[in-house]
Image (tube, rainbow, N blue to C red):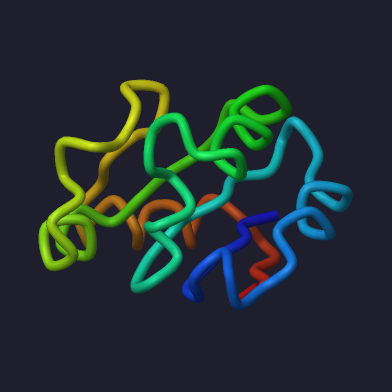
Length: 95
């Protein structure tokens, strides 16, 4: 399944999302959701310890001035790669 997180981690319950995600799932962070991936943040450390398939839209990182504050463990993608993610998964859930 592909999960997308578009809200700030301060406005949504990412801990609940982490309980649902399996190793085969991908999580895409976009819009204000990119804030969750700032290096050394408590939420980010929790996600990194449990997940491997983390993606973030580059345009949203740049728009928020966070492009160089994201770990190398997160794959920065463009809109074409976003489309590829959606076609890879039969199910999609916006968080």
